[in-house]
Length: 135
Image (cartoon, rainbow, N blue to C red; front, top):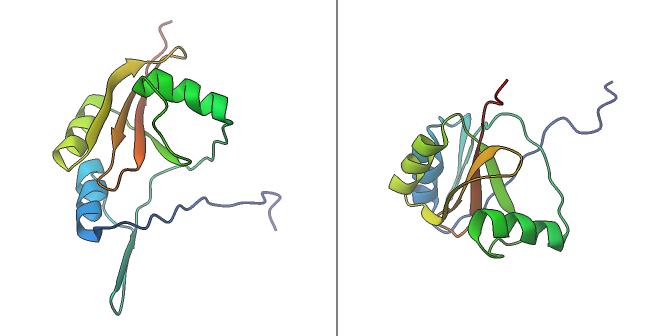
């Protein structure tokens, strides 16, 4: 038995256009599915996206982050934040696969390079690149 009460965070995203979303997330992020399920008329896949964390914000914190990344309060109750090794190339790939640019990239006060996008179903996505700290 482990002392860790939770082993993995999974988010199940129900989308309007499955094929469009598969292309967006798989090709746009350059991720191969870890598993694919076809159950009668139902389709699903699983993408392994590295380490998962859950951030819980109050409305003031959500507004602060939205103001910084998007210029105003725009995200809903859930927003994805994905750490990528190269923000510019990840942003371009996602834009080529149907993302909508919500706001141009910004350098945050804590030193990350962030950009706010929207997926084909309207999900707000922050891509962030941790910038090397100068020594």
